[in-house]
Image (cartoon, rainbow, N blue to C red; front, side):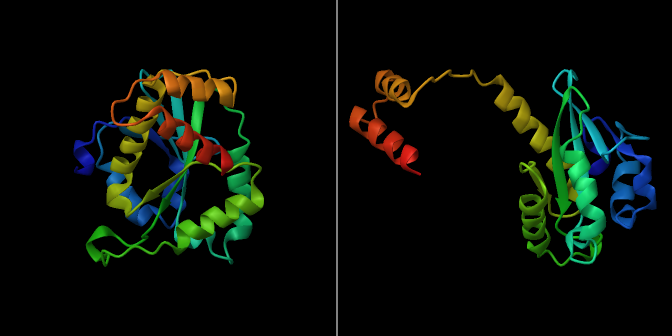
Length: 195
């Protein structure tokens, strides 16, 4: 999907203009209808979810921002984002797997930045934040749209209130499925509980 054709609505923080990532993400954002610039506090992007009652806030990182020489400035930013008390929203960290413009990207993406981000989160945050891996800047808005669609789908799923493993097994055993026997349901659940 072309950046200017995306139906995604949202806001990016004007502070991105002063970051090195602006040279690759800036043209995508400024060419996209529905994406506006504003001052955001503690995050780089804000996107409405569903009807707009909830918001997805995104912190954008790059492989260079999680390298050892940059971790000292990235860690406090990540920690602040993690404990942000802004109401009515979800949070995620997007990481560009390639900082090169699409036209010069080799087509191979280095996963070192993604792995370094995961290690940084484990070492510095009380809980992991969702991560949106983005192949390159040209894929950013599409990746965010897919992530939001996934959130909307999850929210539409009916919640099953299972109070105990016994109740879960009873629920599975009472759910008809012609391709699985009752014993297979119990076996699958037992294996899951053993993990």
